[in-house]
Every structure is written in C-alpha cells, then in structure tokens.
Image (tube, rainbow, N blue to C red; front, side, top):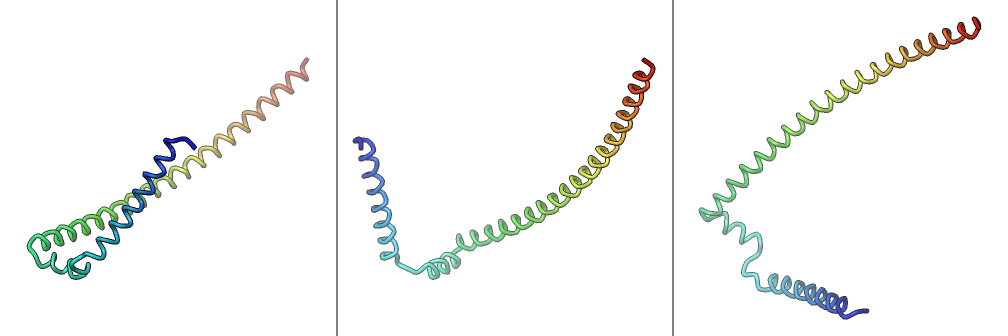
Length: 115
C-alpha cells in the first residue's frame, strides 16, 4: 500500500469518528427536546411566518402535483391515440406493399412466360 492511500484512509476514519462524536455531543447537550423546540419556534412571530410559508409551499406543491398528473394523463391519451394511428397506417402500408409485391411478381411471371 502506498503512502497516499494510507493517508486518505486515516483521514476518512478520522472524519467518521469526529462526525459520530459531534452527533453524540449534540444529542447529549441539546437544551430541549425536538417537540419543545418546535412549539417554542411556532409561538414566535418568525416561527408563525415560517409555518405559514411552509403551508403555502405545501398547497402549491399539491397544485403542481395535480397539474402534473393531469398533464401526464393528457400526454398518455395523446400517445395512445398516435400509437393507434401509427399501427393503422402500418397495416395499410403492409397491405399496399403486399399488393404491389403480388403485382410485380405477376408481371415478372408474365414476362418470363413471354420469353
């Protein structure tokens, strides 16, 4: 193993250990539980503003979701219609091709019989 990969490995291990120690320290030294902190924040003017904006964003995201679903359904219907038209056109082209092929074969047979 070369020196560079050894240093990288040591750095990664140190970062992971530091992250675990930091998370444990934050949990142990937190002044309030999450529930208490959220209720305190909601009681402030800034907290109420944030809650209001969060509700507005939720409503907008629901509206956008509904619009996306409607648009998806519309696109799906159009694609199904186009697929049906394409299949119909392919069938018509196959019939024409078969008829043309049969006609060419008959003409070639007639030419061969004449010679």
